[in-house]
Length: 430
Ligand SMILES: Cc1cc2nc3c(=O)[nH]c(=O)nc-3n(C[C@H](O)[C@H](O)[C@H](O)COP(=O)(O)OP(=O)(O)OC[C@H]3O[C@@H](n4cnc5c(N)ncnc54)[C@H](O)[C@@H]3O)c2cc1C
Image 1 (cartoon, rainbow, N blue to C red):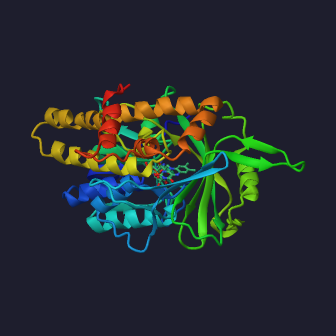
Image 2 (image 1 turned 180 degrees about the vertical axis):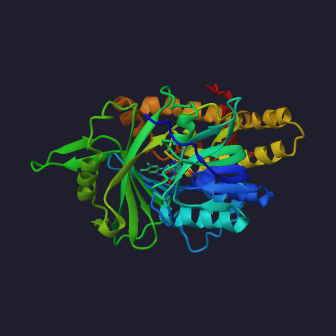
């Protein structure tokens, strides 16, 4: 067999960011604003869809504000409406100095396009239609760029293109081909979720994120059946909702359940004035995985940083991943800018090694609590008792909301803010 052709020489930059989801676009924005020459490589072309619930908590909203994104006119949410055990509990987002008291809902087609345009306006060079296949390494094994295939490539050539940079950031989502091919596979000791979603028209006007802790279906004989997983209805403010349901791999039903079928039955059985009608034009029911609790490590080694789903940064308590991708983007960019200002390569590398430490300080203990929680809710007995207790109005429920959505005031605050912070600080960072 002939040896594969040597890659063609491509572009060069200070930093290459791979993947223009929220994590990649935000990383590129922060870097470009600091005057860093940044190349943002994306396999798709915008606007493009991404399977997601489209829900943004106040924590994610704060990140969008920090990033300077104009969210006026977007659907705002006041809090969460939980349903289960025939009960309903409505909780407003907490009032703190740290986070706004509202969340947002925005389709990912819209959100991701806003974020990528923001990156370009800030000075990032975006190349769409470019699939990164793996790292480019020097003789020492350090990552000094990426190998990529362009969708526009002239087919007779078929050679990979080598783009070069001093630092590379993998933001290419849950499957992260770049991280995998750089020798950082998924960790099997971390929780994985899987979820499906589609868009539906509804006459109901809603300004809470609605969450069904138990999914029930009536059969023809009038018997009620409990279905696996938990469901959501997130209002888009345009006469549609994003409806979906998810399940964790800690549940016995994981891997044996046709989630799309469960979804159809659940949607058909919904009362409460939803009258959901599938918005077929917006696409079929589609599913994807949620990588939780930092499932790819190390977050930095040999010139390559991991951000967002590429590092498995979804919160195991609630399935939220956009916020953590945005937070990691902010932190990684700050670290890269500081590293770039160091005189020697060794100094620069030492600063880059600070990124995993900062992220683990900020999220390690909290994600450990989340993993424990995910294992507990995998047990149906715990889920039944937990849902019953959680749906009782009381002080405890507000603490739970602050814990599960990670919304304690960052400094000072009330006793419940300090309690949530203390729990995260005490949990081991495994
Ligand atoms: C069904 C479902 C519902 C969810 N609901 C919510 C929710 O309501 N709220 C929330 O906060 N989170 C939710 N999440 C999680 C959330 O979608 C992710 O955590 C979030 O998208 C992570 O952002 P990211 O930038 O890291 O990765 P992504 O958004 O996945 O972006 C990765 C980007 O990289 C590109 N890419 C991939 N491979 C390559 C390659 N080889 N070369 C070049 N480019 C590449 C992709 O095209 C994409 O643009 C949900 C997830 C699922 C599956």
